[in-house]
Length: 162
Image (cartoon, rainbow, N blue to C red; front, side, top):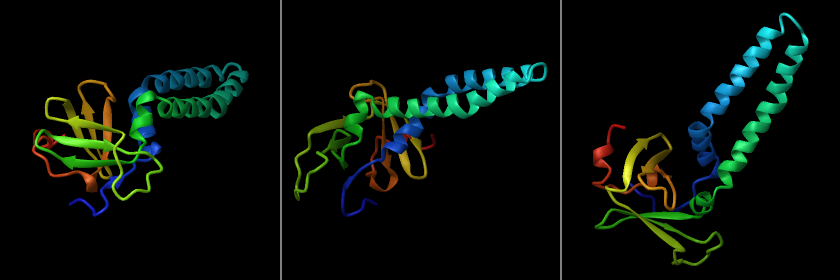
């Protein structure tokens, strides 16, 4: 059931979490391997433990911060952070994006994106957001829609259990 106000905003932290989970696995494994090597080498020379601790408390937080900046600084993120609305049409689901400072009662969308069944590759249901992965990456590769704003649609029936 959709709330009365149909315009919503997804916070950047939700997209950062998705991007770090998607693209941060390999760098996390490399850093974990290097820290493990420093821990093991520390038994023969304690200076390696100092290097491992510097990596743990300086390099790892710096990499996480840089990953957050990279995730938010993407071109496609600029559109996804705008206020949005979701509506059901005959062709599928239409996502409309609005200006940040629109105080009008009926604002004009700056861009609209149509989500039809052939453009969707996977739908993942979560407790707060529904992640819709798209087949093409133009204008973005996935979108997060709050569960309370998702209209009842037939295009998501094929993805009911993912």
